[in-house]
Structure formats: C-alpha cells, structure tokens
Image 1 (tube, rainbow, N blue to C red):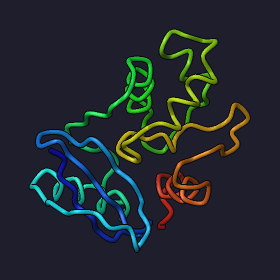
Image 2: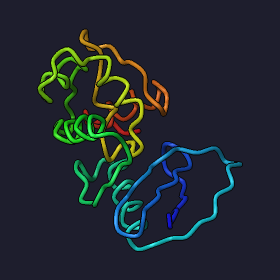
Image 3: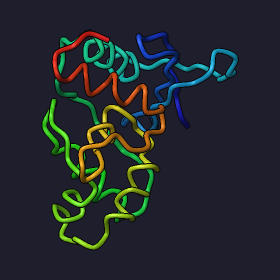
Image 4: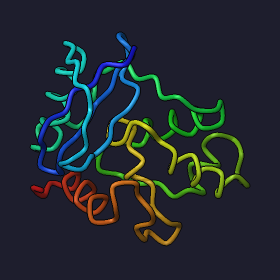
Length: 154
C-alpha cells in the first residue's frame, strides 16, 4: 500500500509517496489534483528535508529511496545521487560513469523516467555544452534548483 503526503513548497504543490518503508515517488502536482492522503512519519520527514533543501539549509538527503525501474534505470539513478550538490554532469559523463559510454540517449531516457525528483537529482544533468535540457518539472524549475545549489534563493 502506498502512502501519500501532499504539501505546498516554494516550487509548488508536492506529493511524496512511500511504500511503508521507503520513498517511491516525488511529483509536483496541480492544485486540483485529487489524491487520497495517508501521512506517515517517513513522508513527514521527507517533506521536512525537501523544505530545508528548498530553503538552502540542506545539501543532501538522508532517506531510504526505492524508485521503481529497470536495472539500467536504477544504475543511472544511483549515479545521479553521486553528483555532488552544486555540480552538474552531462549525459555522456553519466554514461561513462556507469561503464556504458555509448548509452547517452539511454541515460537521458532513464533521467526522464526518474520517479523521485530532487531526492534523486536528475536536475543536475545537463547537455554536453552545459545547456539546460529537458526536466519533468520544466526547464524553469531545473534552472531554479541549479541556482539554489549555487547559493541563490528561489
């Protein structure tokens, strides 16, 4: 059974889900989105950590994560978690990091399927030329998150 906690943040209304022991999904949702809410202490802790991050008071998370995906996707998502706060990597660098240097497009697709945004920092992946590329929350949000990590308030 999935539990959901919905709360307002600086980036909009966020829904965090858990499976009872691990965070499984994080999404920015629309105001009129109807969800059956079942808050847990894990979800409240995740919400607290996310708000601290968005306030510029936290640069890492201490949460059990369990994203649903293929083995390749999970390998990519684990690599994303190794990108230090305030830094970026290209899709090519991630492909090389996971030992599959020709998998740039597949890394991009895995990035796109990341179900736990921000906690698994797919916003830290940019084009080879440093340009901002697709982000589930939109490029505006990606730019805000990267600016936050450079010390600028959202």
